[in-house]
Image 1 (tube, rainbow, N blue to C red):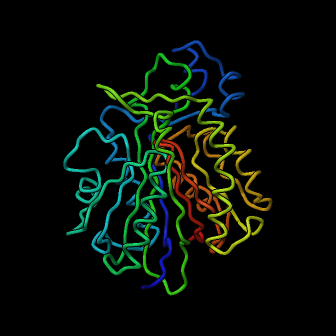
Image 2 (cartoon, rainbow, N blue to C red):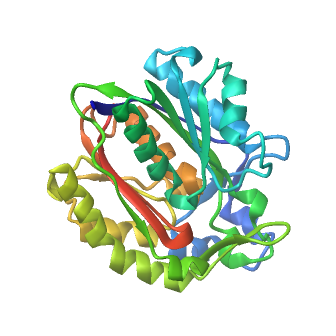
Image 3 (spheres, rainbow, N blue to C red):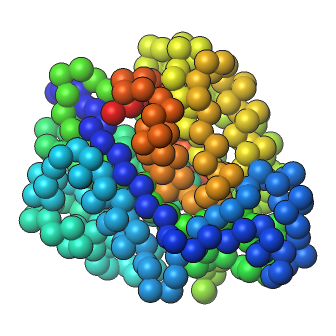
Length: 312
């Protein structure tokens, strides 16, 4: 057994930007209504010819380049997504093909908004156990493809994108123990169901659960990593809603941390939100290399997963 670390990050967003004013022309809403309730200003929208695996491959290629690695250096590809349309080949296999990889293991994980932190934990376990040498972990979702654009309560939330991390063995552990779980009896509160599939949620129930039940769980994540919340350099929560992110971050007690607020410009990108927000923080230099960061995903299935990592 050995430790692991995130060697590098990368992210990708489609070029098309949808503003609150654009949405106001589609449904009964306004910039003020959206900002006051969820804090979102803009979101990126993928075109019909830009599938989930293409966005994932772009983010993965950037992470590989940042790590100074070739595609052949990866022997495990994990893609967290809940919006891939085809069942087979899975998204991870298509990403591996796009990147020209040789013979990696390829797995998709569907834990919706907590998908990336579940996938990161899975990669950590695989590398520490010796069943993989180096993993490419990606969160990618095309939420706009499963959105009801006549429902103003959900269509104002979503965006598309992908974020990626290279995970490798390390003598100094850089990925802390995961704390994960779910509330299956409340799984109906966030849904992607039907034919064609459509995203729906019980907003008030999710808000109450997130703001009351998740902060003590997030503090336990810090305890498992042996770090006090006030010593965190960054907090990267699932970018669901600024009105959830800010109170949850405050209740965690990370008084000195940079709080990721990428939701304001990207919307809710589900499994992509945490790696994309973290990649942007690191790229801008908002958090220094080696700084401890709490990653905490939550949402669909009312699942959650979190770990403290050290920034590349």
